[in-house]
Amino acid sequence: MERLIAAGLLLLLLWCQAAAGVGGVVGRRPPTLARHYHHTSSSSSRRHSAAAGDDAGVSVPAMVQYETRHYTQRLDHFNSAPASYATFQQRYLVNDTFWRGRTAPILLYAGNEGDVELFANNTGFMWEAAPRFGAMLVFVEHRYYGRSMPFGGREAAFRDAGTKGYLTVTQALADYASFVLSLKANLSAPAAPVLVLGGSYGGMLAVWMRLKYPHIVMGAVASSAPILSFYGLADPYAFYDRMTDDFKSESKHCYEVLRDSWAELDSLLATKEGTARLKSAFNMCNGSSVGDIPSLLESAVVYAAMTDYPTPSGFLTALPAYPVREMCRAVDRSGNDTLSRVRAAMGVYYNHTGAAACFRGEEEDDPYGMLEGWDWQACTEMVLMTYGLSNDSILQPPWPFNLTDVVASCRNATGLPPRPFWLETEFGGYDIGNVLKRSASNILFFNGLRDPWSTGGVLKSISDTIIALVEPKGAHHVDLRFSSKGDPEWLTRVRAKETRIIARWLKQYYSDEAIST
Image (cartoon, rainbow, N blue to C red; front, side, top):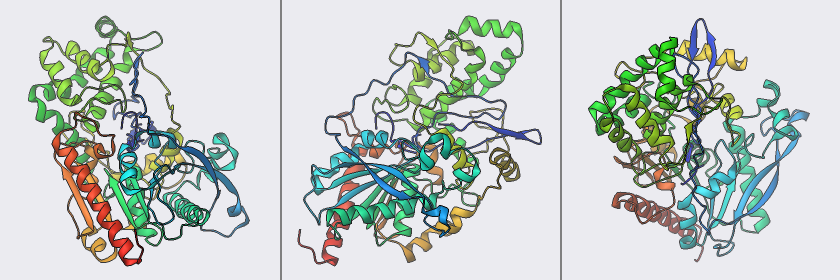
């Protein structure tokens, strides 16, 4: 997807702001799963910034057309207190161009942590599958994101914990369930099969919706969905270790240069002479500081690994094919000093098009309205295990994982004790293979092993209808992007497999329901 799958995928892909220090420790929170935009370092508050003038410049395909509608959604699905009956307008987007009628499929995108239009504009797999299946396309926006704001607007919705408390996974899934039933009733299409799709956090929601509401959705396609990234299920060092391996696989020298660069940058920033040297080596925009350089480099390293796509993309910024490889080539071909190598690596990520005149650091840049909501979710129940930095991590210095510190940091940030075990309790996680084998069907997982989020994904098929497609060369929800002539054979093959699996599920559904198609 060219600007976002927004994919958590475009998750998608925002790094959360720093949690306040607790006991002298700076808290590290996980990135969002869609637009991964802000990141917090263990040594200081470092923010992702874009290079001035940089624009992905990717147009939306002409086939992407939809109507914007609204559904009157209940505030609280699980309480009968008077306040629960309040409502808000939930936005959704519809395209029925290809729909063949009341028994034809509905492909439902479970909106991630962002503006729903981003997902509709970038989830190419759905648009390309709709004509084949005669399907209606529906993209529903997640509560507290985009324009789907309870309490009348963003400011009121995020006023305090009392208003933010309705932002939970279970409430969002109940929104989708209520919406689907209403949609089908309005269409007079009670027998229409509904397939839910999502990437990143949206992929997690797709899986959980199939588990929670199997009578409403007949299957789920979950791309890069780290449903096993919770405490006790995932190695808290694995996310950054996988990212490190991506760079090692391209060039050991590149990995070593970047790993050792943090200490040199921090040392230079600590003195006036060093700061002057950085100013000379880097062209920072007016209003930006050389203090932004570590943040810029850190973000470039993380996001390049996540979006290491085999074709040029504009997911987070304009990038060449295989950006990790290109960053390492730039490092290896640059001069003998660390600063020239760092600048070369940053240039690949932030100025691939050559349009940027300088590097720009923005203290607050949240164009898709994701930070407030995800900061809340990441410190209440979406407590994902992406905190630890091992001794060999390309990001330095090492950051030992400590759940007590994570919990304390989140509690300090929200004023509430986080619930790191709740989603495992609600949807399962331990012994996931046997549990799903006994209780679920029609779930398709895709994971690319160059994606750090794959370390929390389901990587082995569980049954004939719970299928894991794993691609060693794949990146974050690459399968959900629009196809292109430059796609490698393995990616074309993955999408063909996914299409065949969906077709098989639909055939079985129509057979079970005795519906002639």
